[in-house]
Image (cartoon, rainbow, N blue to C red; front, side, top):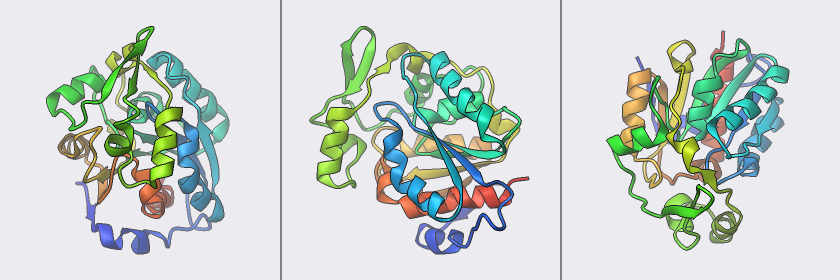
Length: 246
């Protein structure tokens, strides 16, 4: 069964993880929609300072198939690894995570679909608080820049959130409708971070998905950009996954 780790103890309890004792020493990070891989920098810096090798996938966000292919290209060269996905990136790691070198999956404010489910299917089950996603042309979607700081990154520094808003990567609407064809979490151990003030994915939906997958879970006070506001705790859970990998 899943184990809940008190948020206040998460950083201290998990920080003892060390690649000297870890079964896996490579971490592959997958960003979500409306973002790019640079958002992982605070987490990557911590992991690298602890001796891990980090690979960051840059998703084109032009289609689900293209995003899965981009991730598989990185996995093909990564060796044994922990595969981490944020938000829509949870769709990607669920689909690509059956690659044999992927030992564990970590979902960060992410969707965790079953076979036949899309991100939009899941959002329809328990809708998010945010209503700020809209079309920007050619079938692509983006978050209203004025609403982005409060909906996506409310606990990030204001200047950072506003830059993320104007530099966001629009995502293909078809990508959000694409359905998972496999569910890697059924075969690989999974871990998850649930931000309690997430407005982009309803925290209750995240709880439903993690309970279904029997993921090990930490809940943290924070926004959808929890990888920025709580980078030490997120990194610590990733290291825990690496340490427990078989």
